[in-house]
Every structure is written in C-alpha cells, then in structure tokens.
Image (cartoon, rainbow, N blue to C red; front, side):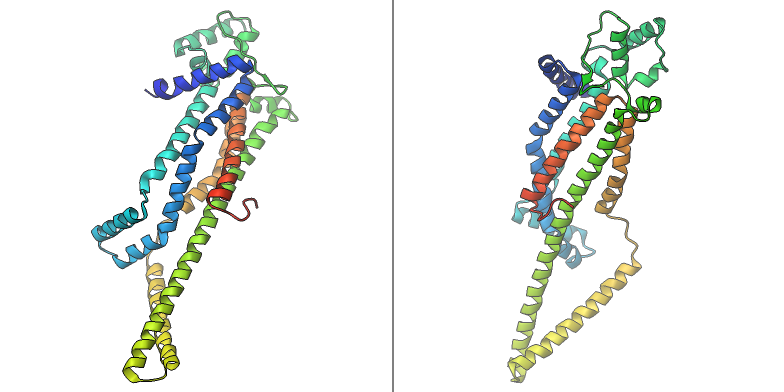
Length: 343
C-alpha cells in the first residue's frame, strides 16, 4: 500500500524529470523543490493552526486552573472556547504529517533507485549483485547495498552489464553514486565533505529559525497575558475603591489605595501558594523542551546519514534544508511576524 500510493507515483514523477534534464543530481534537486512547493499550502496551514492554538494558551491555562480537578468541566470549557474562536486543535497535525510522509518517501526513492526508478524487485537486485561479483567487483555483503543501490547501479554501468539503464550521475563535477564517507577515507581533502557539513549546518539553522519563531510567538502571548492581568487588576482595584467609598464615605483616592493594597496582598499570597505547589510537584519536561533537545541531536544525525550514504542522498538533504530555511524565513516574517528572523 505504501509503495502503491506514495513511492510509485513519486518515483514516476522523478523519472519524468530525469527524462527532461538527463542528470540524476539535477533531477533530485528540481523534484525536491517541486514537492516542497506543492506542499507549501499545507505547511502554511499547519503553521497558522499552531499560531491560533498558541494565542489560546493563556485562556486554556485559566480554564485548567479554574476547574482544576474536574476533567469533564475542563474538557467542556475548552471545547466551548475552541468553538467560540473557531479553532480546531487537530487541524495542525495533518498538514504537518503529509509533508513528513512525502519526505520519507523521497529518502527511500533516492536510496533505492534500482527498485523504485528502474522497477526491479529484490530478486533482480540480487542477480545484479551476483553478476558484479562474478565480474570481479569488490563488494561488501549484499545487505549493505539494500539502501545503497545507487552504488550497484553505477558499478553495473562501469562493468558493462547489459539490461541496466545507465543514469548520468555527474552533478557539479561530483559523482552522485559515491559515498562521502568512503571518499573521505580515501582522500581526507576530498570535496565530498560538502555533503555532511552543509547538511548538518542546514538542519541546525532551520531548527534555529523555527525556534526563533516559536519564542517570538510565546513572547507575544506572554505580553498579551500580562496586559490582560494588569487590566483585570486595575478593574478590581476600581471596583473595590467604589465599594469602600460607598460603605465608609471616605475619600475615593484613599479607598482605592487601601483596596489596591488588599488586592496586592491577596495576589502575593496566591503566588506563594502557587510556588509552593510547583515545588511540591515534580513536572515532566514539556513537549517544547523535548523537541528542543531533539533538535540539538538532529544536525549530527543528518550529517551522519549524509556521510554514510551516497552523494545523491546528500543532494536531496541539502536541497531540502535550503528550501526549508527559505520557507521558515517567510513564515517567521509574514505569519509569526518576527522582527528579526536571523540571529
């Protein structure tokens, strides 16, 4: 089902692009850009949905505090708030899930061109591997090439094995069938360093841009919440002053001062109680903290993948990172409205 609905249509499209440009690396670049462009509306929809949820966080926290211990009431009030603000909590998940599915599919298409681009099955790939061994090719175990088929394809062309479609792997003077890790082991000063380095830096920078946007949205939310609390406090002080003035017939200003002092004292007691509760409760790290921790690991993981697999996969990773950075810069500026999207 996965191959039929996702892999095969994408592989067909990549083949069509290759037939036009006649270059494997360029076909990967163009198709990656095309896929990201087609998925752009979904990416934007997901970001806007997340922003809408972010703006509701103060009100959601108020509901949780007000009806603490009553899950049914909390769920009911949250549902009413979502309906009032026309926000669908799960609407941001699907727009983010679909691009991720497409990107995973792209990974496997680039890693397994024999099966997905040339239409071979695993038995035919095994036959090709055995034919290369018979012709004296120095190969590792067959399992090693299950996700490095581009190397088998390149060697099949070099050894003149018939029945295998020859693809043009030369892109910007580099062989897309070469594994950067192997090239680096043979010559430390090889230009194939560019793939793990640029992939790692691109992943790091795109994550940084994403969290700049998240932090800006959070800061705006905290500012708005502080303004609401200040307005609420001023209103309470005014009401208390009026009551005190009516009951005692004292000067309005003096009454307001006394009332505000009482409110501040009450808020101080509430803050102390809240702090005490927080100290007594050990909270697990929230989702945002976990995601930040993961984002610190991903640049190294991306660089490792680019190091271990063919340069063709590195081209895909680099292109995907560049497009993602451009899109995130736009989102930060136009959707989240970050004042300075770059550090």
